[in-house]
Length: 168
Image (tube, rainbow, N blue to C red; front, side):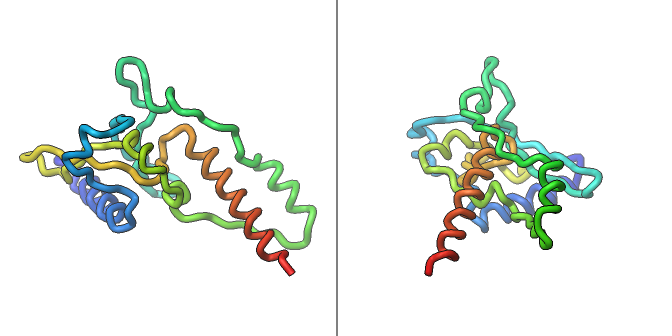
């Protein structure tokens, strides 16, 4: 962050946004020693040059003593629909609908006891003070289970919506 002012601005703005949306929460001192499950995740940025977009990622594949968070959680089934299947289904009906859910993983809250498995250190580039400890309160980009859980919840909510719409 010291060498790249654009990166520092991006990270600071993103963290501020995450605090405002309550995606992250700073832990109190008493919570640091009372965590039922504890894992610290390193933060990294990934840039998609095609979309000209940078994304913040919590690296759940990072290993400590040969073990990562992703090694300890269930990945879940692959619930993604193949692109070919989507294209073929466009032929079934005269109208097709498509959508994109903004910040999809961040729309799904992680239960309180599991949030301590998503701890990270942050000091906003202020090198003269110790970092604060935060937890992600929502699913992250980087957890092996996030795609499967997000798709499961998306389908479950769609099924519930259909039932509500179909009620007489």
